[in-house]
Length: 469
Image (cartoon, rainbow, N blue to C red; front, side, top):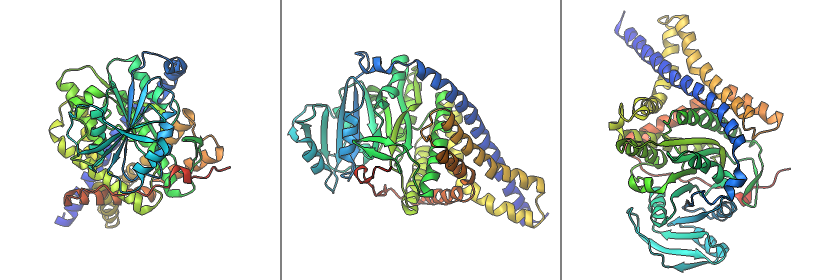
């Protein structure tokens, strides 16, 4: 056997081992998520949300909404938050040095007045330029500060919080009316809960009025529908599965609730990564285990946060490159946690390490394995096994996520839309998946080159969305 032949066969062997390990994780999460998807709706049927909405034992919550150049969405977002069903909450909007009319929109629509509020800045942040209270809505506070990034803005809000719980919400997101009730329900049921998160669903294509989603529809652009399939798979399989084993390490920055004392104890959000939402959860796991606390970090699939996603290839490319770069940053920052800290260090972080190198391994597989087969160095059985792992298993997982959605939460009630979702799930791994792999590979290159910028995303704005018949 010659040198090139041996190297190619050895590379193919490594690629096959990678696929086998990754899909063992996928099947593990699939089994866990199926059980979670079955049990959770049964629990929800027994929940008395009306009594919880009027209950004095529901812990007060501060909703933090960081905003940078969000003049198109910020007012509707805050109106939606102020209309939530929950007995005791405050909205704290943080204008992170916006260069557009974000602060002016807030001042005009909520009649803000500058005030002095005593607070203890335990977490270091960029300087504050002012704190404002609304004369129209007593539950609204606005912080204006020098730009420091999302983590810095959230930390400024945490410094002002006086409630036992904090919920972070993105400025381009819309929470359903009972979302806060539902995400806080586990807190009332289990004193060990230190963080709770809901599902993020895609707003594109839906009708929005008065800060509420009035009609759920699939968007028309294929690129956006593919993202819906991705989100369903990521939340209803990945996060639900890890949550079942208390191994959840990602609470989306778009919608997540935390005990405020825990957030302060770990030092707030980190500015060392663009994946601050994942990094802070890993740090909470480590802190709670170091303190020998009995704790739970949960994903709850019925509280819904609706958010815009990119509608163009260039915007989606920037987002996926940033996500991949953020994952690499988090794994580097917590490299000493591997094979420590229980399930997080022994299973979750190794799983994400496989996800990190997946673009390299999968793209190499698409090149090396067909070449080896064409040159007669690879058996037909090996090629079939590779195709099953590379394409058919991924298609099965996507299809299963759509079916779980249909048999449990059923946000897309039309048979035509269900058929369309199934069709996209069946073809996702034959083009779109490879496109995302390319972007993720570029994200690794960005990380190795030391890129730090966030990357802007153009917002359509809720008020720009027509109510579709």
